[in-house]
Amino acid sequence: MTSLHTTSVRRRRLGVAAAAAGLIATLLTAGPAAATPDPGDTAATRSGVSVSQQAEARAAIESGDIPGVDEIVHSDNIEHLTNVPKDALQGLNTDLAFQGKYAYAGNYDGFRIFDISNPKKPRTVAQVLCPGSQNDISVSGNLLFLSTDSSRSDNSCASTTQPATEKSSWEGMKVFDISDKRHPEYVAAVETACGSHTHTIVPERKNVYVYVSSYSPNVTFPDCQPPHDGISVIKVPRSAPEDARIVNFPVLFPDGGNPGAPTNPGVSKTTGCHDITVLPSKDLAAGACMGDGLLFSIEDPENPKIIDRVQDNVNFAFWHSATFNQKADKVVFTDELGGGGAATCNDEIGPHRGADGIYDITGRGDHRKLVFRSYFKIDRPQADTEVCVAHNGSIIPVKGKDLMVQAWYQGGVSVWDFTNSSKPVEIAYFERGPVSTDAVTTAGPWSAYYYNGYIYSNDIAKGFDVLKLDDRRTDPAKKVRLPELNVQTQPDYFGR
Image 1 (cartoon, rainbow, N blue to C red):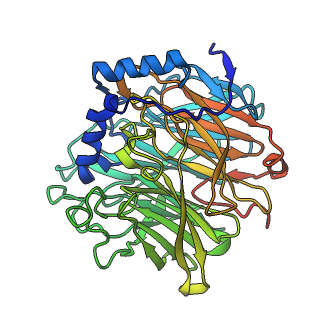
Image 2: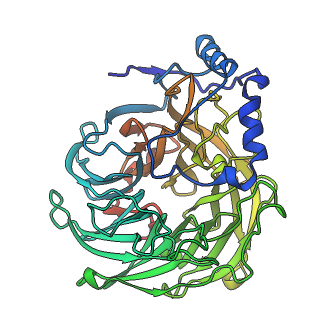
Image 3: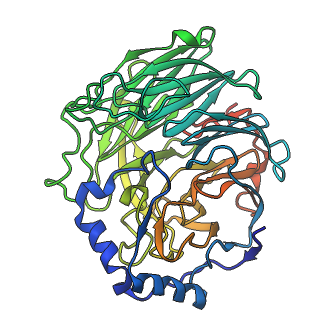
């Protein structure tokens, strides 16, 4: 059992720039290829590092600048309640969804259902083997939605990998009936162009709309042809999910979107969206779309309408995800610099690249604009063997405040305050030390979400973590109870 160590937030930096020079030079010169998002349908990335990098990591551990290998550290206001290691599903852990006393955890090999009625002792209710990365996951009522973005031999849960160049290959959305949590039933599949890297649901009484984000078309892929300038919209009838079908493919980038390099070196060319977050109570959505950030109306969910579009061709490499504040006058976009496969939380990269971008939403109606205010990035030092990247997080619901918890892979879990858009500040954290001091390894929290008084984190390598946050600034959130939470379908926390 890993012991807990309570420490103050570390502020010292790793001092030997030369130790990381080889890795950083590769990252900075690789251009858009370096920003290919998320690990592929393989085991966790492990790549060699130089002898000097290994020595630097060991020296930083010995001096106390960073935690030891697998050592747990955290701020005084966070308690680590428990960790549930991987079990039958040994792939990479991915996203989370919640419903009542249950948490649903995605994994490249399928999904796992936990009973979290006692957060200190989560119990496994079911593990469903259904390979197909990333297995991005959402729930609504008796339905569970699962994304497949790796080319498979067919749409079954017994499928095998198959090249996307073959017409018979399948990628897309799967739908399960979870009426019986112990025995989920696979009931529907919808193939979508370029697969489903992520998805976002817009629930209604009779139907659930699913916005499917995917990207990277190729002329050699029969089912993923360029241009791929929009998203698939799937309509799923609750009473007959087997009738799920695509009802629209709205074009979001009529001009083709961000051209990427060589026009904008180091920026990903826009060929679709990575992730979309909707705020149904405000009929709004925010799209993180590779080289572009979007604000659009979902008043008509089958026909989303673009309101504004922004780019950051100086510091953003890959627009990865988005989070609204409760008032819908701000949105936080994340930059997945390095694609979830590189060490980017260090002096050489700096505080503005691979960070969150905070935007105010100004104006009204169709005249609203996204206005950049500042960047936020964790400033706790990380070893150059630690893959560290801005990833999935959620609002912590406190009236009058804009608070967020966020996963940073091996940068751990960060709780931060962006009430002042121009001066964000971290107020709590939890992290483990490097998985290795001799190889760059993809690990750490993929998602970190606040649900009904606790923080739940799905660690790519270590399993399911439960954290308790005790802080006067966040304590009011403990009174907010939700029957269901899909973070990319943001609820109206206070208007229910």
